Image 1 (spheres, rainbow, N blue to C red):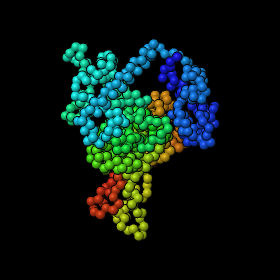
Image 2: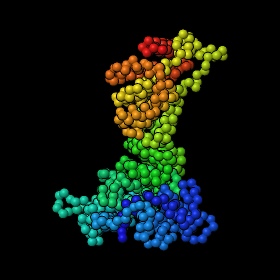
Image 3: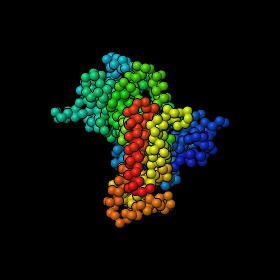
Image 4: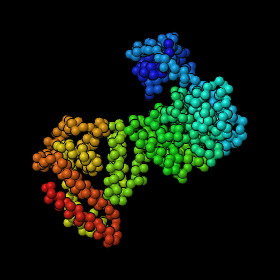
Length: 604
């Protein structure tokens, strides 16, 4: 009886391999794995490991490894069908035979795998007999050992050499076409020509090491396109594959510093220098499937794309992909190349040891995000600073994991504080020994700020209480609510928790928002916000449109005052000319005036 891969995967996903092995081997937890004495031979020191996450066991003393099915076959003496039947019953999975369509699909795939192997043999044979192609690779630092290890080949400058070779092997045109190796002519009926011509050819394998496609790189730089991949076929789906993945995937090998580059030439270049833990997507933006494949190998891969604008944009797209998919313990690091260099160029110019140091010193995802956003921001104005904060909050909402989102929020806040309030640490308070302080020199003691009066925190309470009483306000003012600068810890927490609801529920309806507020914030509204609640009671007979416009007006007043506060805090406290002193006094006077207006409008 034959079993589909999806059926076997379903069984494996429902049973922990440690539960099966643990019935025959005494296992002890050690980090992410379990260890025990080998069931295959006598030993005193445990060399047998089991990994639930990777669904495999490995015995170092006998070099045997496998999954739940092979364990029952090797240890219990069952046949494979018996092992599947026993485990399916345990997992509660109904066994069924392959349908005719499934058997046909499996047969078709086997045929395509065989054709790809034949084509690769042909390409490899071509390369060995072509000095020009060998010379090109040699100039790129790719020697015969690497050519052999990675099965690199060459497609002749001929329209039908591969096609004729496969026909001589009794392969049908239909199957060669399905494999993506030939193209049907639009000019001549029933005529075909080779897809790859005068190109270095790199075999692309699936996660199990079977050749499923090819990538071709031109030798003549005038030929276009520079790179050509196999088309989508029954066995080749480039968004699900990574170049060199199967070569480094190992159930027993611990991989350190896995580097992700843009293409297979960069990957081969690093491999030829001895840096073999490298993979590459296949000419398109990285997909979620590819990211998860990489995370299956290592927890913290390193992205090293080209140093040009296109490479930087591609790296930013990886960040966009990673943010909603982050999980505890899974991270991404970055190598930022300069001067439009690609990894191949960098290694040739600086050597592999220098590249290895870049990998060790790579930039973590949170720091890379901060660096990217700060470089694009204009923080010389209050508006620019507010814009940076808003963009970071928007990104923060995309983080799927709540705990990771919390820690990213703390990191961004600390980073913003360091940039926005750097001058505060250099400000010396007024005392007898510090008579040159600018605030003493310009006599601001009559200013409300100078006398220690704080911005009315009542505006923050009005804004939050308004949302809690009239959640409808959020529907048309979510961006304003998100961009609020809130100094009060509890009120800021309330705002962030409501925003978290929008992330977890993805645009919740009004009833969901109201229920969330009612279940969580009634006590806060009755106690901490009871005075601002009275303010809103004066408008209980107003339409929601009127209430929303009042809320927006409060928002604009509050943020305007805080922007002035930020400007004052960031003002150069060591100004030495009259113009700067006048500018500071002007800002302070303006703030005093705005505070008076707010007090008159909303009361004390």
